[in-house]
Picture 1: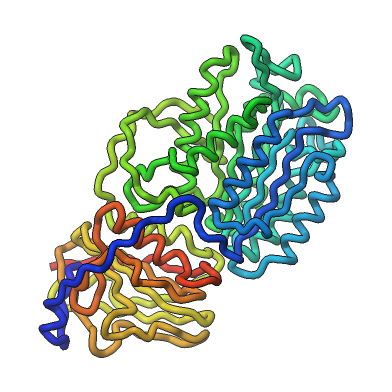
Picture 2 (picture 1 turned 180 degrees about the vertical axis):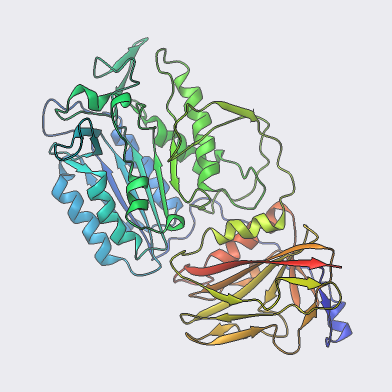
Length: 506
């Protein structure tokens, strides 16, 4: 839609004022009080038969870097190291997180150590259970962890879980017969221990897998509010390098801190894009290790989640080969894809879709649109929004021309966007109504209800009548995403959202 205005002063419609350009954040973003992290790192186990993981000390440093990149204040990071990370201590730490957080907070949970799999005597024959191994040698099943994390997920805006562990002893045809792999004087240790389970539980052809992502879906968690990254598929081994830490952690951390690229040009670097970068790194790192057929990272939940804004400069993507990143339901081996094309101008609707995926999906939005298709030059744009909580309304529209992005509300003629719970607001309000302006196609409207107001002065935009039209370069997309997603002051970033499609026809 190209905005067609009426009942507006002509002088206002003629203004084209370029807003100041703001530099993007460099280094860690400012800490935000509503961000929390739990870092569990176990390199030394109590039972002597459990192999040490000497590189875990590096994982702690990299996990701390990840947490800071996600704006977690240092005082909100809880660490469980080695002997501290008993099964009971892990349970207590997660319960403590649940007590501390409030609705709308974000939580990052990181685990580096041994994964395990054991036979469930109460299940059908050959049914094996996956879990994490605490420092006292007691396992925590994905079923138990899923139940504890569900209570967190019901309160959080986003729950991000990263496992650098694995759940099998190797591929079915060639499981590891030793507890380390050596080549040219270097040594890697698989991050898996069978804890006395039968050999069948270490062989992927003989078990039914129940990943954490699957368990949490079955328990009714909102998929868009949870992100789970596993260092390897259920039938693969992840490795500890004593000189640098877990391969997956090193790769993902480095990609988060600048190596990842905004491949689609949307203005932000998503979990999917960071993980694709990390997978490329993993593939290169493992080339020098004969006998390792691959380690493929797996994403469960919201792959479009933007974990950090420090890397949102939308740097051009190099034409390097892309790799397949496994989803939680993937089964076939990952294979190289076609070369990644250079970044092209992303459709504005895609920018709004990515913002929409940052919402708290548990917050339902009621938006009523009288007409789903408008006649160009005749029908007026209108909708009504009923708030289920106090907050602030924002409307952003991607036009049917596949090029324009407008901040419709609030605007120069109607700045009062605060709304109370139970109130229904019809928009546009008198004074800034407009009709469908063409061309034929589809408009995408993002409706947001935020807890706190946004600082719109940061937008890279021009005024078009009373509205702001976001500039469609890489920095314009990035600043739109950051401005509309992040609170303009200390407080909750959480918001509910609806994505509405309205057609335009001659």
